Image 1 (cartoon, one colour):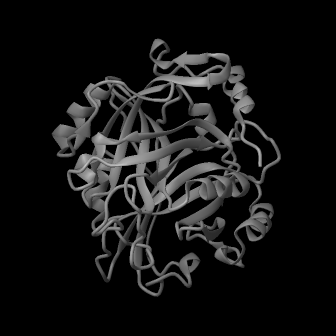
Image 2 (image 1 turned 90 degrees about the vertical axis):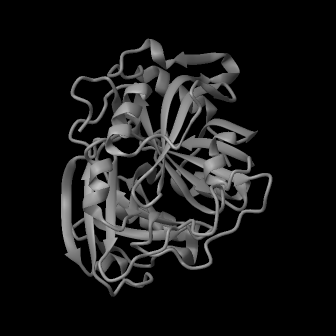
Length: 358
């Protein structure tokens, strides 16, 4: 669970890193399909922090953080600038190691399904299915073959009429769920088990290896952080999946960070030093660390990375300064606010003035 003495706090999921082959095409697709039309930054920079994930060579990448103001977490959309990114040479399957699926939220699954069929076409499942815990759902792919799942949610920040919200959670393949829980539940605070079953998963029908049994555990935080962007992001979920009859490959096998795929999962944290101590004691120490605030445009953050037991790349982000309306010079110094003090609603709603329209 979260640190009982509050030396550090995992506020919740913050974003998913989505590495693409065509940045502008993907940003447009995500705006139209998922309403991810509020940008925080868009810049091209070297990424020395990621040397440990790029075979020791510093790459250059373009990155844009975008979100849906109705609610949900963000995408950090990435495109390698110094090399030509490549996809996995197989279709990523449930139970492969790493982030295999990103879950998106909707108020109305039927309305969102009709919308997705128009935007995503044949890459969207033609039918609705049902999760093992009884929720209606469907799956689709983006132009790079990254798989998304849509689920209904009831926590929203506002309503602008778009059928989709932002990121609700993600599915992570692991080789041993009990070992993975020592990180995701014990340290990162996703300690509330909402579902735990083993068997063939009917909503994965048609996916590679879908006829095989899987253990599937759905987690959320029993005590999520309330500060910062908590009202906007809402409750977040992690689903751990273990293939029972095979060991799936790591989704970035023979590839590097910023090759095509779900590059990382980012968490919003307060108290980075104390979190580092807790991670060290559990055997998940920082693999890389900016050791100070770094800038992406006017956004200032402290970033670290760790690996889960199967090398899934997890980013810890402590935010210092974020632009609310950059063109007006309106910024927020997050560190001057209490860890559980939410941002004013008017300030979050002001983000709508940054919306990108197609």
